[in-house]
Image (cartoon, rainbow, N blue to C red; front, side):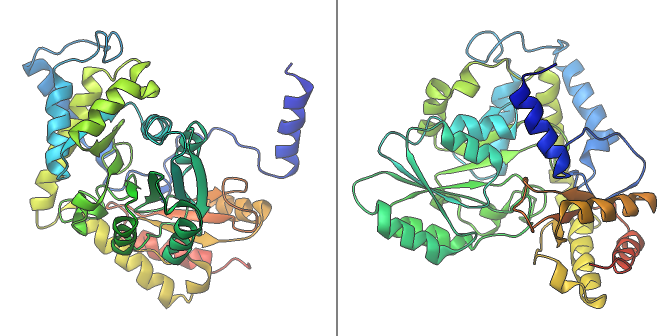
Length: 383
């Protein structure tokens, strides 16, 4: 038994057809995972990480403590250096997850009397971190630079330190902001720009190093949050920024200070995944190229089947088909599963009411026939 108030909330979720349950592994055609390049199942990455540990006598299972105690094993420095070089950043600090990184950053960087401006569709981890901050926070309309500038002029253009937060690819929409214009506005008003690149790494940039690098905005951005659990197929995250920013996080970021560090195996896998990205980006038939071609083909099939009115415009790996109502979108998701396709229904309150959706994640290993089949099947449902 649990307290009555908690049971009432659970009952309410069930009544709204929004009750969450853990899924099970399946052998369906994958249009749901964040494993955009198939790295999570890569045998070369697995083997290279294993052999690196053996060759460097790193045969321990755990980190044994936080990085400020006993957990800062030698591999951390090597991997952080590798990451910062790959993303053309001054420095990198590894966190245990993307959620930890956002919580760790936003809970300690903005100070009392500072002002935060965040895109209204920013990820829950960003919003949770902001709630833990002592700064005042205001949202601006999604991907609307005019809305941001109006908010800055209304609230922040004075002696206050300002932070502007957005994502280079939004996880629930798959779209992107105008990062160049955003950086120009931030420079104009002396605001610090922070970009979450979780869903851009391994998808954008010549070598999969993200949209900031693709647009050559590295020097215009105060901090970047990158994660390794999506296209890199492993686990963990990092904050990219100046040496001073890294020093500050080490001293004041509680989710960094008070947690057990990642074990050597996790770091070795991150290292091997970055090495694989280097190899992939140099190949003529790389997974990066396959992914980009599949994204283009998915968009062309949407147009051929006249489904544009249902989909949010996207050139990322994430494509969302808006289907109003939890019951309706769950029904269609289940019907697709019965036909062999794993396409997740995203329900309210994860997304706003009447903005429920099917979320298609495109991968390098999806075939064009699979893409055609799932979209043609989608056309058979009445919306």
